[in-house]
Image (cartoon, rainbow, N blue to C red; front, side):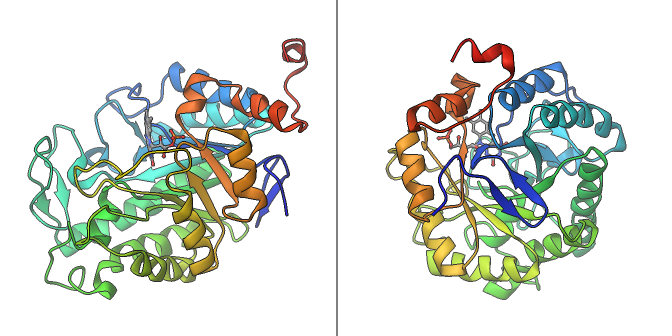
Length: 339
Ligand SMILES: Cc1cc2nc3c(=O)[nH]c(=O)nc-3n(C[C@H](O)[C@H](O)[C@H](O)COP(=O)(O)O)c2cc1C
């Protein structure tokens, strides 16, 4: 079995190790969605610190699909140069790069009206959304596709669809948020229709050797949400449509915290989906202990480990983990004197 510091290859994507910087909104973009020097420094520092894959935070495929007006956008060609500068620098330091393509739907906080599968929200702090028409759904599918084209123009090695945390794709999948009575709601087949259309549209414009990643919420923490068995069936369809690697998170459809939070609290979901749908997975969620990360990889419970908050605390966490595990990880020459 491979270990945390062994390389990982999926189609044309080759990572030097199995640590991914988890996507984390920085709320540092300009109102027009362009990135700032904050992003350049923030992502560049983690590339220098040795992670195998730098995943740029949720980037709105539409202006109204951003969580806030300080979110990164990928809905205009004007967003490409700033992103390309980040990609170029990260690559120079041996990290591969990805960007998360997102639409917040109900959970957007922009001056524009919110849109969603159905015209209600479970959250007090969000505006009541407008129900998307069939024509508008098609426009958003196209927006994801155009965003994937822009991601490639910026030089990203791969893209991830944000299908988790109660954002638009998740809103369609979940019986908690999708109360439509047309072909996009109701039955399992109807609830997966929009996500599958997005996957197929994005896949059309990705080179054959570029893997497609998708983040899902494996549990909605509610008996009225989808079950793990249903999630596995969804992932099988996503795989058939072109998803190569599933990034397994949880929650977000309802204003509920996870039932318990402990190191690796979502790891069992990554393992169940990996085995149930026979697809590589990324595990995330308080996986900040090198031995626990190594255990998850060596025992084949997940293929990559995404690290969030620990990388906010310590940009060189990958090096810290390598030292703890007695593994090799090259940092730039001048930093070697510090480790
Ligand atoms: C500041 C912050 C911003 C986040 N933004 C995103 C995001 O843009 N997209 C996403 O899928 N998850 C986002 N998350 C969730 C993280 O990617 C990750 O799944 C979560 O923090 C659990 O991992 P950790 O315990 O290693 O931090 C965010 C988390 C934090 C702390």
